[in-house]
Length: 159
Ligand SMILES: [Zn+2]
Image 1 (tube, rainbow, N blue to C red):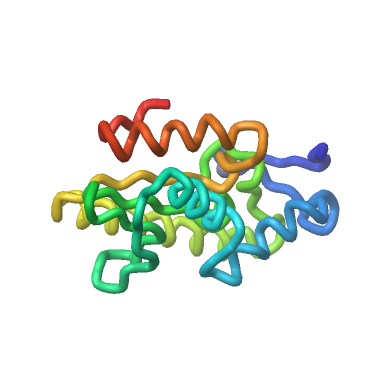
Image 2: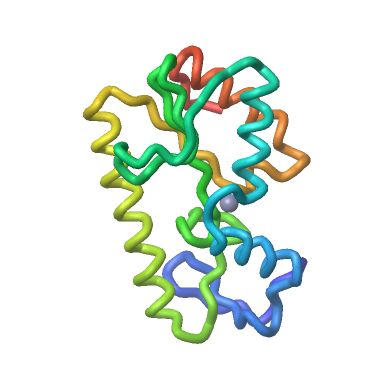
């Protein structure tokens, strides 16, 4: 996928969606709109399950209704869409050229909420790992899975 007509706003690349958003990227973004049980989250769930980890999903009483909760390890794993959660420097975080301010406001608001949830959960003693969807692309999935295991067992956030 090559981006043409790129302009810059800060360090966020801006492109016209109709010009360059490939079908792949569009469906990738759209998959997040549907919310629960989207594919990237399923990948992580299947992996954890295959390794014998037990978890609960979308726990309502916890801040931000975290995606995957492992009570035994006091660990939470959130799977974030790169677009909606503004994954900085990621090729899937491309703000549309039209209604740019509106999109930026919306995504920045999401990021604020993410931060607030994170700090509340930490205060309650949870370890929280955020995985972005691009980290589950086939090429780097294995690496990400290893990072998840390391985090669950040692609380290590380095990759
Ligand atoms: Zn990303």
